[in-house]
Image: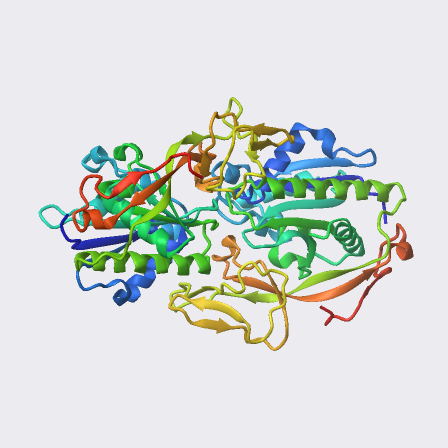
Length: 316
Length: 316
């Protein structure tokens, strides 16, 4: 694989997720903090208009506007569709070098701790995630390796890309603890990339847990789409913990528990994320996989699946 | 004092505070839950349009629209100003019996637990607050006994009134635990009022902590009004805990701690409430008072300050 020449750090794709907004502001005030000798670092505030009014978006969720077809559709006209095209041009300018690696900063009202969300299981992404989870035991790795066009997230425009999703943090709130932890994580990413460019590897072989997306569960709703139950108190805040068949999932407003009726143990994430009510998502279910990464096998040629193997998927 | 004939429970004055929104919906579906034999219970969704779009308000914070002058101003024209007049007419209809007691349901991103906010220190309000804190040790009592017209909150339209403010809960999220606890608190209020009307008293004499509003502290800002620091991690979530002179208050984005420079120990509340960023409030400061309430001294005549006395205000 080629060296990393350009890295982009994007925050505020959602205007009310302030950790990313204020980190980008900090990096723009103190650019030396994200400067490294072997690559260029771009910092970008994703949705300035939404930041101004402290909302997730103005017309449409910007993090669903990066569908390849939409990016090349001259008729798309709402604010976020236009903004997505501007961002795409900044990160992948025609005739110039595109960004090689992209970090997108988010926060969530779910108890996701410090989550790395991979949009694909590229070995380079997995090795970087393995490294981050090795240096910080609070780091969790969630893989949403669907058809990259399906959700049309920002991270889908680069193979080497991931989101940092921290929480629980309320929308419109800056939480200093998560601000500091996210900042440290970003510096660790940049140091890792610098070492990579210099032919060093910071990662020794390692096994880490990868939580792979399986599907979603919506809230129970009535015929008009109104929510009829809430996340069960026993499940609230239990992101990344095992949910077994029969465990309580929801509690109806009149006090009836509703159990998980799946056939196997799963690991829910994004439990009770505020922005997902309107998307029909009460939580995402994942399966836990143990992933073995050995960077020495692939050195700086991380192509294919060299140096990566799945171990027993049932391991807890 | 006369018996209580009409009680109003209002939720969703802020459209993205869902505990109140869904409790009102529940009470309207199951009216027998809030029905008591000796008084009428009204339930009201405060700001339906804001609920629909999951925002605090459409044009203006509805909970600042109940200034007496504005309520009688025929020219006020934005959505919340009109809505405030409608609510006022419902609760205080001309020529008919007004509501005697008002409970207003809110949630906050601050770690306020189960807070009773008194808009005035009417002995009846204090006795009710004393009772609620006696039956549930999680209950805190915050007194914002300013000029009732100053903030023009809904609760200012009734002498016998209080808000229930629960948190931390993110905006746009239903937290089952707080939903259940708020519901139980409302039933306890209704049972208390029923007993009062029947000449019984549920409260024995009791001393409880009253946190009285002193003032606010804003975030450090630059000349353009932009926030330059966040709540210090050591203060985050420490609502109702003692803040001493010299204790850390804020942490600037470049890592400098900013200390509390007041001269006496105070007890901050509403620390890092999302909706208060735009109001220039990082937290409210209170002083802790111990209040002694003896209902037997005032029986059902709670006028004046009978049965209530302040003890040492410095007591912790």
